[in-house]
Image (tube, rainbow, N blue to C red; front, side, top):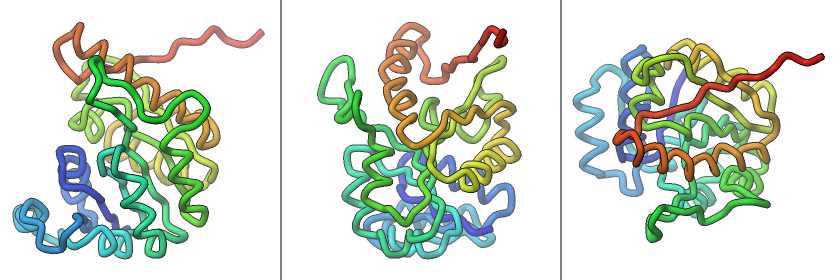
Length: 217
């Protein structure tokens, strides 16, 4: 399987690095083809790691990870709608507004960034995942001690199954909860508010939750 990773920040670096480590073909995408961070990553990762523009990475991957900052993601993804047609797009981004203290969301309540991306890219199979934890835990669930859960949201059941296998088998998430269609990611994006509050309490971004439920009946 081939993967595109959009974004050269900490999240993109962690996800691209993990995929390369488990032997996958990975192309990191940046706004400019000559991005120094992407070039350095590809050289260091070796093997079949490569880099290019966002469009290059989208065209390359069977599965593409959106690791672009949520404030800029929608515009960037619209520009590469063609190469993303028919692909699985794993949306890791959150619409975080850091201009406020504590941080807030630029879209919430009756909409979400995940939904906006799916509407803008109707022929792309968008799956929201991994957006509730710090980047090192995204690719290694054991980085946060104890039992805790990951969530997926999306309209395409097959796409969610593929993403669930990736995060379970390669990223170590033993329990992945399917929340339903893409609208359900309103909840995980809103979790960003609680995430930042917990970060302040515990002094680390490596915090997460475990869901407990009383059995039906």
